[in-house]
Length: 116
Image (cartoon, rainbow, N blue to C red; front, side):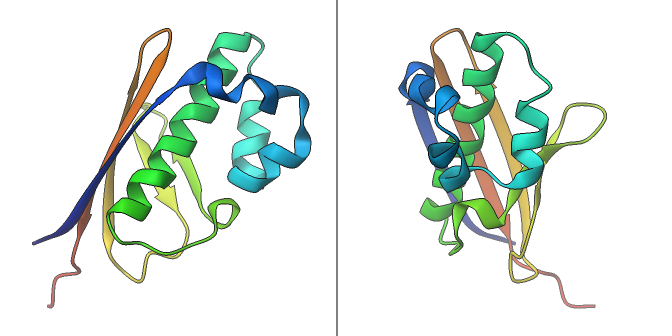
């Protein structure tokens, strides 16, 4: 059963100053996310990545989850599908992230655990 949903949309350029400020990055990204960010070479891809993680974490907050941003990771399966790594109190979280050249949007669905 769906417990809650959340959505966030953001302009990618908002994170341009984060590319040169490790302190800012550490406030919103986990160590795993920073490691992934460092594999990208194109500035536009880095901005999309940061915006996607921030938008997803904001959407999770809007869906009622409580956490510190760097304590969870939004990573990708080999097929590209995003997933959450971190404590979600046993709720299952579905994530969708989409972006174009200037805007990123993230939508999350929190599903209550099923009883067996």
